[in-house]
Length: 464
Image (cartoon, rainbow, N blue to C red; front, side):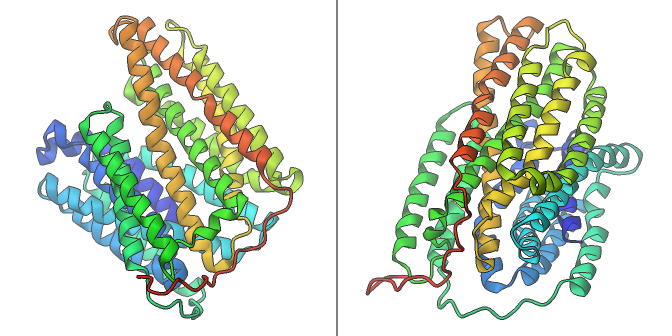
């Protein structure tokens, strides 16, 4: 049932993407404001993930899931009854906060329910399969509800899902065990981390449209706030993020793997969809339906990835995953401008999808290896943040490269120029599976023992 919570979150993102044009027309949202339907959600989701994960450790993961479900349901209700764009945007931001509370806490409960080994790998495989399945169902459900009923139902449908998950958690998940007192909560660190992440997510999201003053100021301000956060964390007695966690090479390298893998997936899928429509002439409906079998492949492979890890080891599976991702990118880059999307795009997507489905669970497995149960919420929040930032940062950089190549070759009106740009994007993205392979080879042979959860005494005069 914890996987159902993740299914609900992924489904919500997918259905909203399908319905945005209809929502825009119904609520009279200006074209320049349309981005806030997605941005309001991503800002709060990305900004609160790490803090929410740590709070799940301190307050209890079960409690955090239940609170998050209530917040997410309230935001969904607000979206469903929105009367104008800004009420929708505020409700989407509330949804993002709820999702940030749910995702790392639910994943933490999955982690702590299984010891490190085959059981956890299989559970993470199920988690990945459910995530992929939520994307497929969301694309189909969003179109059906929007065309045959009302776009408001794509938000209101979250209410019975949330109620079902609450009922299941109350019945099936044991109550949180009282944790050891951690002293005063590091509110300063929590505020700095959240503010810094919100600024970086905002900068990364806008960078896809070019590196203007807003992107530069937001990025620099975000980095400055995060530097201040690190300075605070080194001084406080009870840091919101114990920095010693990053001395675990599985955690540090695993988060890089999650970042690179998410970036590769986001960039590849985004540009493949554009190739289908802008170069090969497929309609939006046909392009969307073409991703359904790819998502189905990812779901099936993700279900089997845990068994593959148990048999061949996490390193071998991740290396094969990276190789398949790279092969898929090369196949997509080889598509001719006058080709067929069925013959020249779908095969590359399927190969890439097999690699993605195979590597999703092992990447998370690595990023949480050697972490004590008392810090699994934090570890889950970190890897979720790495995935979120990987998607937006990599897409922004690749999009800038693609646009410049297209313009240099004659502009988007030319299919050859457009394909030259997307081909460069696919080939540039090959650095990501290469980075994954390097990180995998650098992993230690034996997992590090869980880091102690009791922080060292702070210097005299330190501040919370």
